[in-house]
Amino acid sequence: MEDVKALVNLLSIQKVKQIEIITENAEMSPMTRQFYEGVRDGLFEDDAAASNALYGDNENNPAYRKLKYRLKQRLINTLFFIDIQEYSKTNYDKALHRSLKNWSAFKILLGKGLKLTAVDLIESVLKSSIKYDLIELNLLILKELKFQFGLYIENKYKHEKYSKLYKEYKHIYDLKELVEDQYVYLAKIIVNSKAYEYDEKIETIENQLFN
Image (cartoon, rainbow, N blue to C red):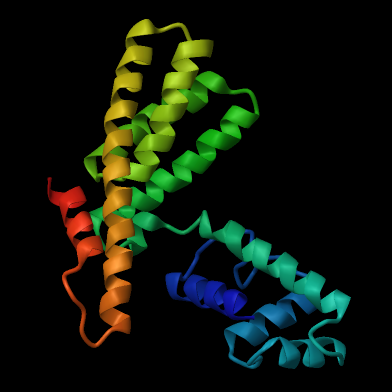
């Protein structure tokens, strides 16, 4: 229930407008609308309360589980229609959300066989992704671009360009992952110990990160 609550609350805060998926005027079955409005208005504290109100049964009721799954999928779909320009707090947030949405669009277009349209889209996304240092997304995009221009779209210059960039960002990503792993290790020591010593393990970490 908590995941559905979170989605309903998010979309209510965003004040989603003119979306034919999950707005106040969207077409829903009476049961779906009752469930959605009950969650929105705080009438259902948990799955047990919702299933009892809707079906007179516990949360394991197959009909309730199916209803919950369908509403959750509908809410997730609606996330793609949020006006990120209006509701994102920073330029970084806007760039991140817009880039991730366009990455999803790229994969859909590619799956439909619209290769040139998909690649053109993702090349434009890469500019923003690099500007805002979205390292993981950069890697995904560059991997696709070097593959597309290396195998399907004849362009030696772009294939070499994106292959080189991929290697550069792969190196950055590997370093970032190393730092994150060591940060987790050290954070656990600090959280779980009242006192800790500068031992051989910590010295090894220090040498890995700074030498």
